[in-house]
Every structure is written in structure tokens, then in C-alpha cells.
Length: 152
Image 1 (cartoon, rainbow, N blue to C red):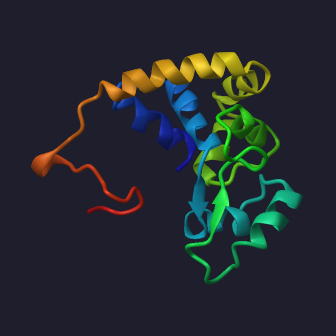
Image 2: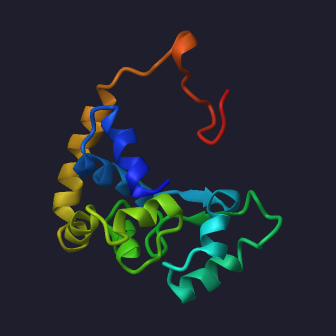
């Protein structure tokens, strides 16, 4: 999803652009399945060439859908600002991640988090508390997924 779609999606939940960027920082830990990011790696141009080469070695153009790649290329098991550093260097693994740093309104916040990790930690904590206070849709109006990539 492009930034123009991400912003209203978060806004509908009462979250600001700043909170959206801070929450995206959760991608400093974790991995994504090849099927989720393959299109970005093989078809987008706003991506670092050496990063693409590295990722393609684990995610072929066809097959390997369940192969995993870290969302943060340098410190994938540490909660830090490495994810934002990746974005500034055009190493966002998923399309929606790189949209946060792609000549748009959120570029300055991403850059700020690369230089001031304590502001990221503070903003992330506040945004998580706010998000945690949202009521999930349940029953016939929604569901809490047991697998994030598919409906129950």
C-alpha cells in the first residue's frame, strides 16, 4: 500500500501519521515471507541494488513463498532504530515500509528516528498504548486473526 493509502487507514483508527510511523518501527524485529515482498524486490526501482541481490538469493522469482527474510537487515533481533536506517538507505523490505521514506510527508520523521533513537522509543511506547486502547471488532463485525496474513 502506498503512503496515500496508509495514512487514511491509520487515521480511521484514530492514529496520526506520526503514530503510524512510530508503530511501523515494530518491523525492527521480525521476518517477512517471500510471497509478501517478492513484487517489491523484483519490480520496484527505489531499492538498494546490493540489498536486492542479497534478498533475491533467499527469495527466487518463483517458488520459495514461505522463505523468510528479516525486516531489519542489520539488527533483526534487536529493538532499535535499524529499521528506519534501512528505509533511509532504500532497504525497506516491504513496499509499504519503503513508502514511509519515499519523498513524502513522513520522510522527516523517519530521518529523525535514525538520528534520535530515544525519540523513536518514546513515540513507539505512546503509540502502542494508544493502539492497545482501541477496541477490536469482534463477532460479525470483525475478527482477531490467528494468522496475520489470512482471515480465520
